[in-house]
Amino acid sequence: MPKWLQSGRRRDICILLAAADDELTGQQLKTRLESRYDTRIDPKSFYGALETMVDNGFVSQRTDGIADKYSLTDAGERRLREQFEWMCDVLDE
Image (cartoon, rainbow, N blue to C red; front, side, top):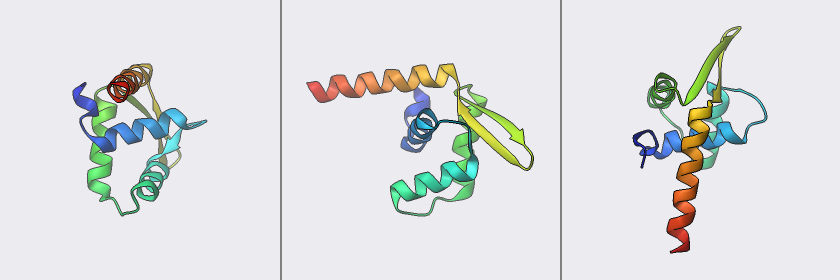
């Protein structure tokens, strides 16, 4: 498994970005994850995961006013699709 997806949180962030019609702010991503997990996520931990994905080229970040907006890169989408295919293969076994 690609190292970047060994974290369920990073994987789920990528899923949310892939499903979004447009870029999402960090707060929008965090709120959606908290809703999914039904628990509060530590901001430092969340933004650390997001920054790691930006640093590794799987998520792009741009500043829009006072908010940073995020989107999935082509590399991130490829890795997410690889992960999805692997999951489908395993579940079919």
